[in-house]
Length: 168
Image (cartoon, rainbow, N blue to C red; front, top):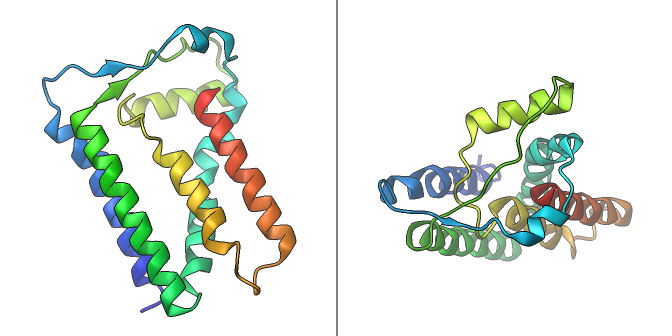
């Protein structure tokens, strides 16, 4: 139970930040982060697999971190708490949005994007919790001698793919 408590608490705080912050911004104007640069970035619906699939990555890596030495584990989860508090402050005092691409077609990836559009409003975009949590996954296991080097490399690759998925 003690092993699962930190990741469960991290998940709980994450949910409170992500879904709680918009309660403080009702009726306020959100800053639109869409810009000319967005027109240069292609819209690639297949990246929905990475964007939604990263939840599995987070669970695995956060559980791996929860098995580490007490000091490292609690420093990691404390840093995650502080990072989410900073995100919360940004979400409340600098609420953001963007213009989502129009969805055309009915392929499986476009359907996945439609699902995302239905369950997730375009808010709380800056800073990106997706990117932050993915990078934390890499940081949390990087010094762990029990985690194979190949998995550490795969974790960095997944994190970079998550970064890309937030853009495309």
